[in-house]
Image (cartoon, rainbow, N blue to C red; front, top):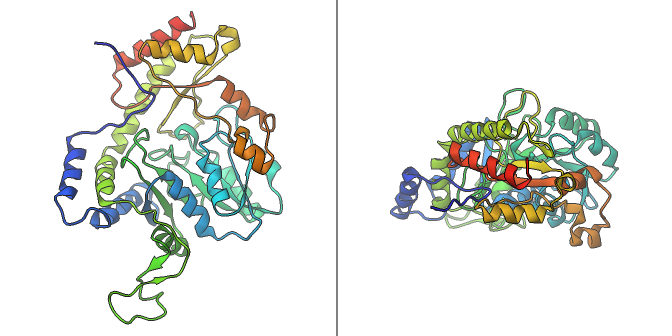
Length: 385
């Protein structure tokens, strides 16, 4: 049988399937009890006080920025090494996205570079926990406190990761809000979905309304209450709700999160050992003390020394059944950002140098040890090591 691997893939078992079937056979398909249960499960896992489940990770970022109600003319700083949503969420709310270059080892936003980019208009920092590794949040929190800035952790890659102090990403130890994505390639999935955690009651109440058109039935907020049908729109909100079907899958997946994390780390260790003696390749770095869930396994290639282009290597790997991907094209080089915000190639050279050599290998729990050995051997053969 021919081997075939994608760079990422969900793990679905009979428990997950049954959880969805149970909802399909219940009285609720959209807004029912599974939403609350998923939110409580995420709070219990992360240690956060509140959680709001939403339609996807981008919705989570959008609502997180919107809930802060930043003044007109605000700027937000995020990483150029991320999916465009990390910056787009600032633009969605009428503010200006700015960038700060990355750390050359972790590939996360560099706190020293953040300090260089802060202006009097900077109001929010959105560090991205790239590939599951937490950014240097103690430093970033200190910078935010020094300048009076809000912090949103983009933890789309990092459900299950832990900071060096042992607390879970999503606890909001260092942030006002944390956002997650539950897309199928992430560590746990709801098919499509996301979540926001916070410890701030005011932000939580805003998120609940923003998720559902800005509407509330909370009797403590209503200006009048003539009957049980009555509701009021207090904010210009969105339809960013998650369904009970998605939430049921997420609850079942969360029960396996620690096992998923452990297996991903086992596979990463096997990859690292296999590539340890391979020249022209850099394996992922993990900062001391942190525990990354390793959403991605990114190898950094010296393509010039190998004398092959990235496209050529990707095609040869694909011919061998090994799917790969590039994470990410630096956001500031995207045509929209160049034309709208005046960014241009060369502005963040560390992110661009990283991008020039990056290639994500397959990483998901269903890979066997033999699969990983095959991938390692194939990569070595292709680059003639």
